[in-house]
Amino acid sequence: GGGPSVVFPPAYPGPLLPPGAAPCARSARRPMAKLTSNDPSLEEAMQDVSRALSEFKAWENGYDTIFEVLRRAIMHGAREQTLDNVSSDLQIEDAWVFILEVRRKHKHRRKRVAECVKALVDSGSERWLRVVSESPRVQETLTNLPEDAYEEMVQLFSPPDAEPEGPEGEG
Image (tube, rainbow, N blue to C red; front, side):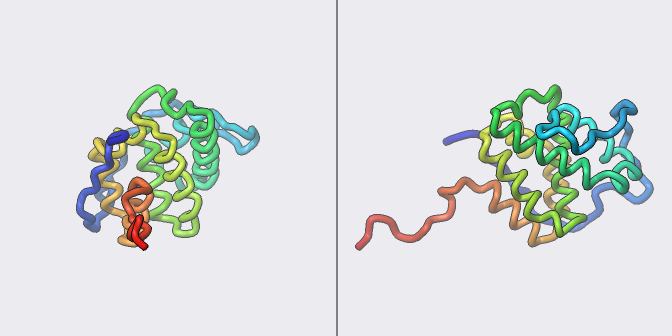
């Protein structure tokens, strides 16, 4: 029994927000992080993520850059074991929703999304894994993924020993 296990709800189709509904803006106005530094701060990346989720324009204009900055920050945080340094679980929740939404809306980002999710799962960060399994918002976003993407996530969240390589010790 390692860290918390991720609970997957049954998949069902449906929009993330009702038409015309807008999530409340939580982040202060700040220029979005640029892809300059090699290791962008996870904190800054998270602020951009929250902004993209709350403002349609921020998403449309910048999701690509925001995702790339977040991806790099996650890879760096996973390497340095600093993923849990995020100030709030709400930001972690936003990051998961953002990553899953990028996967849902932009198929060409499949490999990058998988790389992010794998890094988060492999990091063993109890906080990130707890938010994934306990947040109704993240769970709902998961269930709204197309079937292929949903299956992909299930695979990524499964511990490596969940899939037997074949009979062991025989022959």
